[in-house]
Image (tube, rainbow, N blue to C red; front, side, top):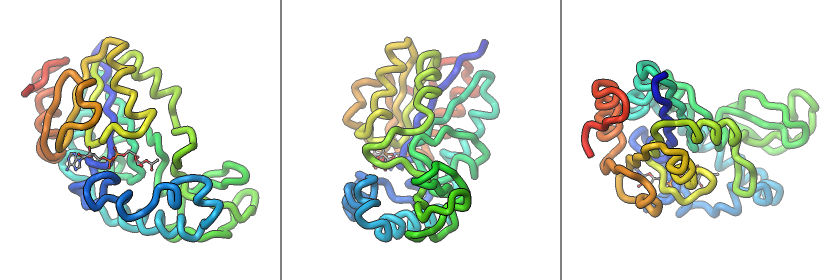
Length: 238
Ligand code: OAD
C-alpha cells in the first residue's frame, strides 16, 4: 500500500494570497489582543468586538484566491498513490477553493456555531451579537472557530493519521501553538520522515529531519513535483 503523508498547514501558506499571518511583524496578534478576540472569555465580555474581528477576516478571506502552494497541495492529494491528509490551522477556505479537502482543526470562518445548542450552519458574511440560532433560537451565534482554551477539532482522527503516516510535513506554521506544534514529535516517534517548509527557521525546526526554506509559492510546488515524479519518500532537494 502506498505511503500516507500528513501535511499540517498554517497562516504562512495563505500569506501570499493576501491573508495576514498572526506572529510575523505587523501580524494579527500585533494589532489585536488574543484574550480580547480569540478566547471564550473575550467573547462573553464583548461579543460585538469579537464578531467585528471575525467579520473582517471572513470578508477578506471571501475575496482571497488560492495561491500556487494551495494548488500544488491539491494536486498532490489528487495524484499521490497513497492518502494525503491535509490538517489545517487556517480558518480560510483556500484548500477547498483549490480543490482539496482538509481537516480544519481550528474551525472555519465560513461556519457559524450556536454556543447554546451546538447547531452549525453557514455563517452570513456579517455576524452580530444576538443573532438567533436557526435551530434553538437562542441569541448565541458565534463563529465556528476554535479559541484559546478550547479543544481543537478532529483530534482523535488526526492522532490516528500521525501514528501511521510515512511522512509528516509542516508548511507555513510557526510551531508556537499546541497541540499542532507537537505533531512533528508524535509523527517522528511513530517512525515518519519529517519535513518543514517555511520562510525561515522556526522555534521547532530542530525537531524536523529536513527543511525547505523559502516562500510557500516557491518551495511547495517544487516539493510536490519532487514527490510526484520521484515517487515514495525521496525529496527533490534537501
Ligand atoms: P503564525 O503567524 O504563528 O506563523 C506563520 C508562519 O508562517 C511563520 O513561521 C512564518 O515564518 C511563516 N510564513 C510567513 N509567510 C510565509 C510564506 N510566504 N511562505 C512560507 N511561510 C511563511 O501562524 P500559525 O503558525 O498558523 O490560532 O498560527 C497558529 C495558530 O495561532 C493559528 O491557527 C491561530 C493563531 O493564534 C487560533 O486563533 C486558535
